Length: 91
Image (tube, one colour):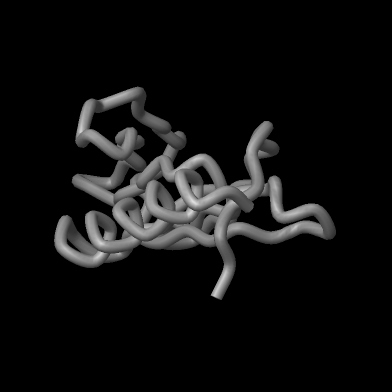
């Protein structure tokens, strides 16, 4: 990983820690934040890139799958699986 990519990822992790919980970061530095039952996605500058809406309000989420490109969303009584193009940063 280049120094620039490392700095972007570090900045994204800091943003994720200060925004709201739960928040996660992907390998491109995009920040995923659970807000009002949806997942909002931001770039490293804080620009809103998009929103993921599930049929039921999302309470938490995590990356999984063998390649780390699957986003699992938990709702009150449902688990959703969403394939993504970019790998998420896992703990």
